[in-house]
Image (cartoon, rainbow, N blue to C red; front, side, top):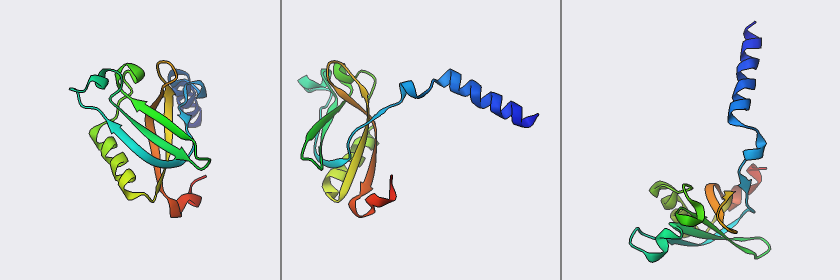
Length: 124
């Protein structure tokens, strides 16, 4: 009986939360090469609060934004931005961005995984 209740609870949660259709996209793993942060006083703040640039192993540079008209409520906290800054300064980290679609062609950053380059094989 307990097993049925647990299964029913899990099934109900999946229905309420949705399935994989709403899952975040995963960007290509690469090196964080630039970070651009706007303050509330900047003219570009309305367009986006910040953006980062990631270069993948093929040399392709991708832009990921957060906040502003480009990405609405998809914002990063100061702690998240500080983590990105540390990763940029460290140079021995790779980043795997998690995104959602924003306005136009904007890739909105909603999460990320940072891994030391020497530990890349630990993650699938």
